[in-house]
Amino acid sequence: MRIANLDGTAVITSVGGGFRLAEADGGSFGGDPDDAVARIPEIEAWMARARPTLDPALSMGALESQLLRLGPPVTRPRQIFAIGLNYRSHADETGMQVPDHPMIFTKFPSALAGPGASVVLPADTVDWEVELVAVIGRGGRDIARSDALACVAGFCVGQDLSERTLQMANSPAQFSLAKSHAAFAPIGPWLTTLDELPDPLDLSIECRLGSETLQSARTSQMIFDVSYQISYLSAVCELYVGDLVFTGTPDGVGFGRTPPRYLAAGDVLISVIEGLGTLRTPCV
Ligand code: ZN
Image (cartoon, rainbow, N blue to C red; front, side, top):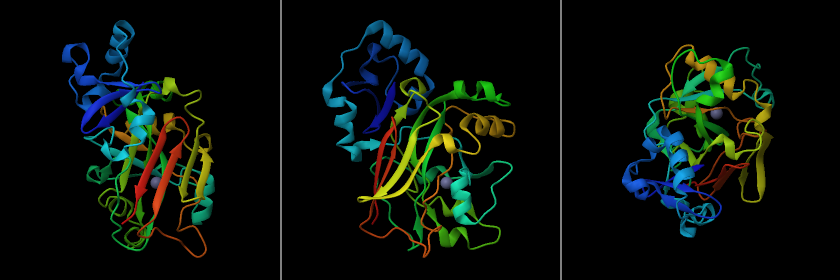
């Protein structure tokens, strides 16, 4: 199942078409996208029973052509976790040591944005980091690694945009603030449940600028996989439905290059993950 946030209301979308959740089952689900994430098993059961008519105007292809109308699939996460240096190739390019334990920071929720949102560059040292984002569907504490994937409502594509000058302004580095400017956390284009993916832990992940590929890897190359991250986080923090986990970026970021390279006004950053869709992020 795929849940999009179209003009602020939940749409269940698919290749062939979709429907507005508020119009399903006599309105019993409401139309709030965050509520929909909490009720995926109920929605799936209703769909299997009721076989709703799908409107081609709400297909994935139709929604993809109007990304600006899509908001983030989760709008009110209580917590956004992110992990640094979670691909060996990325740790290497930054000259930093491969971590023995997950290196966790936060992106503050006010940085969330939809899949087509523009970002106003606050400085000339803003960098790209395409990331798989896991959305928590069942929260709790002390989640075992073997139960962790069952606690994931779905995945979406994310960008962990980063202002490197602010990040490096102090020693040690200041990750959370530097990654939380307005629209520095675009996610989408919709939430995809894991049963839609042939192998949810091995997806191609890519970031492009025009015809140039900046980052290209597979999510199976993570040092700490999604299950490990959820188990590790939940040993400290209670996880809540709708929480987001930015799971790290592969190599190819701008500040790892010689000379370093950053986003400029007029750039349109394209972020793609196999089976999940595309983000389009114009820089102004
Ligand atoms: Zn990151």
